[in-house]
Image (cartoon, rainbow, N blue to C red; front, top):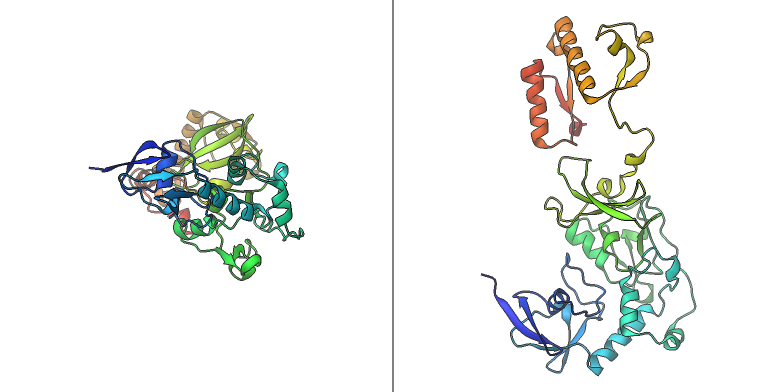
Length: 363
């Protein structure tokens, strides 16, 4: 049985599950506490210092404070407001402020927090050092990294370590020169990064951004076709074109996570060379499967599935009759499920009578 905890936030009674943090409990009850380095998929670290709260006169970070019975949490005391404002000012003092051209647009946590806390532009201008833009890492074919927009929240670093187990990026340099990047300051393209994009989708600002991102008109649920796992997808669509893909967090197979193929390999859907219906050589339709010279085989003709399957079955029968079962070989696919591949090899061995079965995953 799950134990429920009762406590108050700004005088409002809250019920939470034992083991939750004050921040998670607040957000679950539609009480906003500013936060930048927190993500529900990752272990809390409390480094951004924006989720400050007051508990019995002591300042604490809501993301690393566990709920307990009879807590009396305050989120808007003068001490909390001043601390939060100073932390925010330090974060944005040298942040790239070109929000109109930022890939995040209005979906930026820093912009949301700035609106909530309030920003004194005069104080920010006094704190800003002379603008010296760091070079943007544009080497990865799918996303870019702009260190000028990075707030060093560490979400990308923890994502790569805790979720992917890759550790392709980390904090590098010290002091004002601290930034995020691969080992030795090499580019993303030359690093061990797998381009899964998990760090990109969790970045709360525009530091990690998908290249040529387009906002969809609507979204539809689908299943990835690249392998037999069956990861759930949410396809972003404009008109009749897929413009982006994100993982479906409700899908039990992947819980919202995707590999590089599932997240960025969707262009084939709208490719002009993609086959959208079966095609059969003209001679197979006219000569009922009779073998003729290669030069006379004719053009590809669009047919329905019933016709295509009928042609294939007749061709199998002809080859088996003329040359025997071992003249036929079958190649299974990793895009099929385990059950489908099992039936495929069963069909090859028991129906066709051949043991010449191979699989693309071996290559």
